Image 1 (cartoon, helix red, strand yellow):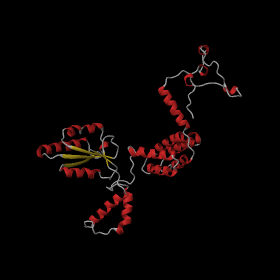
Image 2: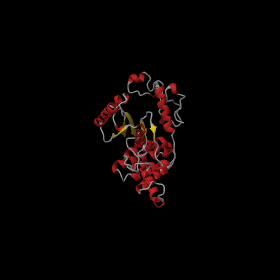
Image 3: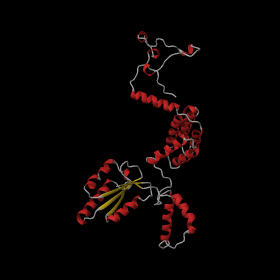
Image 4: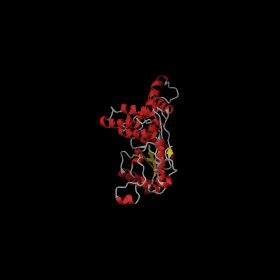
Amino acid sequence: MMLWGPPGCGKTTVARIISKMTRSRFIELSATSHGAADVKKAFEEAKGTLNLTGQKTIVFIDEIHRFTKVQQDLFLPYVEHGTIHLIGATTENPRCKVFVLQRLDQDHIESILVRGLQKWRGDDGNDVDTSQDEDAIKQLAAFSDGDGAFQKSHLLYDRNGDQHYDIISALHKSIRGSDANAALYWLGRMLEAGEDPLFVARRLVRCASEDIGLADNTALPLAMSAFHACEKIGMPECDTILAHLVVHLAETKKSVRSYKAYNLVKQTIRQEPSYPVPLHIRNAPTKLMKNLGYGSGYKYNPDYDEPVNQTYLPTELQDRKFLE
């Protein structure tokens, strides 16, 4: 079984509840602090307990995605033979059948805090007045950012995980949608969590060409200037430079003409033959090439005052239009 959800949403709690309901031994491991030897030892203990007493064991492995494929292969014989029941917990998308645990909202966190406060005061929770603590409870619940375990930073961000790609995608799409306010927020979520500013700057260079494009030809030079500035001065000084660029890209006009046109070009090249270059626009550095007709009939445009009637695409693509 795989439990997928953000930190503090109750993955470990669900595993413990299953263990109690099935009257199984419960062994808790974490891929961040236990290695393959620890896992194998736990599996062998579970095997011994099953042979001696008949009691089954649930092995719960937190952050299971951090184990390599080779390490995960160690689990297979024990799971396949029924020696253990394995429950894995992950904050990354495991891309298999999973049980998804949603992030706790503000009301859920406040309920947890109220119950904890009542228990700490030695009451069963029925008659204790917590109204005087209401503001503090709300503030602490907001700071927890959905983490019911209250053990991690309020910034949910992993530079090597799904959040890394989700938030840069949110930034790009906010710029595309001309929402500078949202774009600044997503920029802050990355930078304040320690993201490499050059990773952000590279994406913004792409955005300047892909989404702003021909509508504002100053966007790409500005994006490159911001990239070089970030490269030279680094954080924290370059955060304002990136904010400057993000606001400009979000608020300026947009055009995807060149982006869409080039996508059509790529599609054509992949799906159709490599048509020959028309003879009149071929290079002719040798006498042999000239005798073969290379460059013959080419009209040098600067020599003409009027528009020149001349084709440049292969004959098979004369009617093809890439740029709208």
